[in-house]
Amino acid sequence: MPDSDQLLVDAQIRYYRQRAPEYDEWYYRRGHFDHGPDHTRLWHEEYGLVRDRLDALKPSGRMLELACGTGLWTEQLARYNGTLTAIDASPEVLALNRARVRSVDVRYQPCDIFRWEPDQTYDFVFFGFWISHVPPSRFAAFWDRLRTALAPDGTVFFVDNRHHADASAPNHGANLRRTTQRRVLNDGRTFEIVKVFNDPEGLTARLELIGWRGDLRTTDNFFIYGTATPFERLKPEANKAGAVMWHQRPS
Image (tube, rainbow, N blue to C red; front, side, top):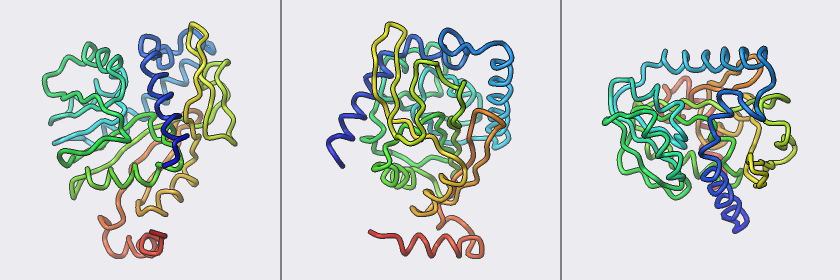
């Protein structure tokens, strides 16, 4: 992998460690993320829709959350019947997550996800607002790692940002032609992080090329979400077209 990618990933980890105390302003639409009451209402309505879709899947068994952050999704996952492993590269957000969730059924693991090695398989894998932070050069390797972590009948569900002019803070960059964007902390410090804005069609095509079938949808304004399944897990009649792409992809 290019050294420049590792430098970018390291900078991204530093950014989220420094951002930990103010991260939830993004979810609650406070400070620089406040775009008015109508925006906030729509944001939380659409966020709630994705939460309902997650709930409808009835996660259970051995669950895994990647890039768990301050616990906005961990809190929901911890209510389901099973055990949960929550991974993040930032000890600071893991501390906030523990304080929010307070569950003995959650195992926290501080780890750079690009260096993570699964120590078991999982029945349900979730990640929120993570796939957009994966450098394009590491996209296939990330999904290959997920393949080894997923139990034979397991499910992957994820949610991320759609590009929307008011989804982020006004002083954040949002250039669709770039795979990196500028981020500014409340104290004015500036970081460059990976941020790839995906759409369902493009992301589905990228997944197919590496052997995954995506069932992806969007909310009206802010979010992209859905499930992903390895082709070899599908029934032969559903797998036929995708399997051709999978076996023909370059090694």
